[in-house]
Image (cartoon, rainbow, N blue to C red):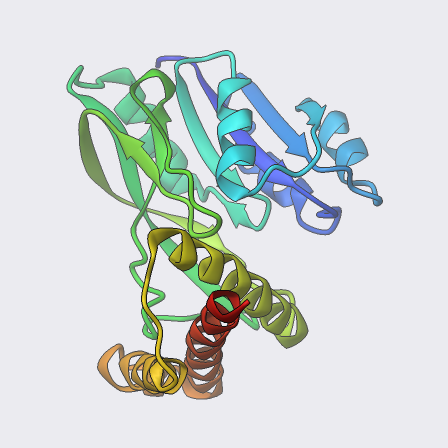
Length: 249
């Protein structure tokens, strides 16, 4: 197997970082870039053998790029602290890195998202395919404030494997992230020169609710599906409301 690294960014993740690192101990290099946590995140990471780099927050894309750049191997598995690599996925990663084709420079995984310990099978949360195993010299993180994306110069292979994602600790964290992401997204839209009208927040919010709850079948995810649909709608509403505010200012 080709040697590979794991890149993780953290901030106050003492309750989740142990399980994350333990799921990737088959890697020979684990890099944790911590943005000045005030809890035991860095202590736990070092106890598990990770290389810890403390770096003030740069933004999602730039922080993850910094973590990838500090990995010693060409191949890097990118994880968040609330994600885990299950045993089946571990075996697939090992197999792919044994027989990697030269024109493949990135691998995508399904992401199995949980909310309140429940696997969310609809609401746009499954299969939620995302690029996570990359050859670092053949790509980079697109410079966006939120929903950062890895851009690769070669081929992407879709693996029949998944990464577990624990999503939110509680509804309060969900609301907090929704507020933050809507602010960052509004700034991105402003930089792109996106137009916004008085009706835009409402129309986008309503469309997002029906898209998530009806078209993406969030209705079949029970109360969690309703909660996700409402939060998606509110996030979309606020994104355009904040954009309108930025344009006015």
